[in-house]
Length: 235
Image 1 (cartoon, rainbow, N blue to C red):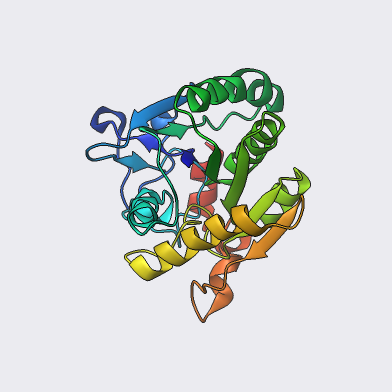
Image 2: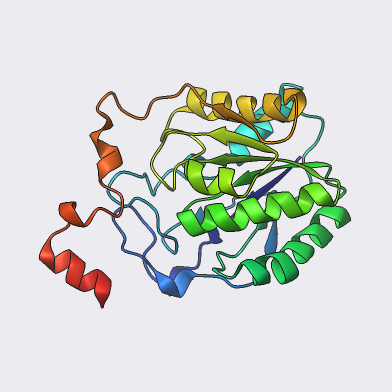
């Protein structure tokens, strides 16, 4: 079982990527990558359009469930993990994603003998790219499940299996510092791979981000931004 992310390996020379950090275009990557699962993997999300007001940017388990996958492996819920994790660039071009990036990812997965993948997007454009990739991999015989928050985008792309996390964009894998939530979401993704009765099967995770759902009004909402912030974003 492989894991595919749109998070970027941390590079200290390319600006801040911590809680409260603004969008960091310098950290963006443009080529698919694979990175060994051995040792510490430090993947960050400051280069994508996440919900910076509500999403946690410190606990990588919120956007990349490698620790949960390793616990599932230890518990016998999955058979094996490949030697690498995989990164898909957040390209806005559907053609580039399907004709350039997706074949490269498929080559990496094939080389590592990957049979199934969990696909974890972050921002809305990540949801588009990862959903297109999932459809491409399905056509190549690799089963996929997308864990995402942007329901409209993922379902429009007609992915085969979709686990909806009603969490802030950028934190679709789990709540911060909550191992039980990490394991539950990952377990649901595995079960969806095993038990989906047909194509375009969607399941909503039961986890709740907050009893106060007003956080959902924050993302990309001009009415909640100051004039100074709007000017900065336009610049």
